Length: 489
Image (cartoon, rainbow, N blue to C red; front, top):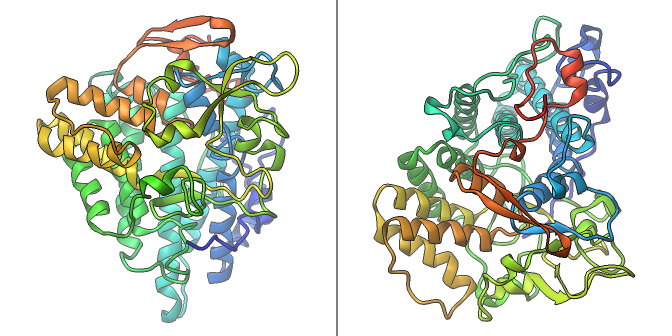
């Protein structure tokens, strides 16, 4: 697949217009003095396209998909730990001692709400544009992308800053502020309070359903059909299947996943090409990628990139794989090749250590972050089917993914709870270092052991309050309607 040739960071105006002053203010407090600048952002098709590209650029941030949202869910679970020789990144999460002053929690909160506000402006202004008929199809596509980006950011905020959907009956527990106004006037957003998790998920579903109607099932209008740097009809459906799964809506999760799989738009990489070969997992926009955050040799995070944080040698290499994770893989499982038994580079590091090699392009950093890919959609359907008692169908979906990675794996015969547990383990093996593990554990209400260097173990109960990030202190101090997460007061 061709790499996206557009730079995401081509619209500094929209980012500048949405930088809401000093850190003493709530990020969610809108300054109406910026009305004129914002009104100028989306005025025609080219400016709308540029605004969408600028919003994709926010996903590249090291505080978002560029690093933190991939690292934290594995680091805070049982897949990864921080080397004793480190650059002081994420160490509080490795030790479970994060406080309200934490810069990572603040950075992710801010960049995700910037994504939402950008999307709101595109939706609000774009839907009011009057364009020639020849441009209306592409405009609809762009607005559909904005709806999906808004849904994705709200979803990620809920995953990080709120308990899972099933933490209370009816999901009536505290979530995050749902911001769907354009943010171009003071009346739109002034110090919003936190909606319930149920309200947040309802808005996410509404946005993704809207996106599906706007994004054509055929090739994206205005963009190359092979260019998966943009959200498409089936990317929105794939994300919707994941959202339904997190909600425990098994029937809809299965149905939406089936639509994506049956579209035949995507194919799993072969066993031979999964961890090696010229077009493997690391290849940006490979055959099974449904939506990826793009990077180019001139538009990347360089030393702040995900690969720099994980890879040994001419990089930081702070993140190491746990023995527990490595030992899950059989010798015949090619996914074991995403790690290597070696040692931490430099003096004073762990020796031996299981180093992470899943991301390794420190030459050009042209390595897309996988937001969702086909193997996940198969496992979404497997879990949804298993929860509905469709064990044979669930086992078949599980084996599609498991046998791709390990051709020696016997056919799955387990049923019931045993089958559901196998699917959870397969998720762990398939998506190690892709930002899934903590969320899978918490939504299954499973406790776990957090591993640290030197054999230190931290037992994490399934009721732990520290698996949820704190609301940033600046937000708490400036927003009278904001409530802090329990455990951080």
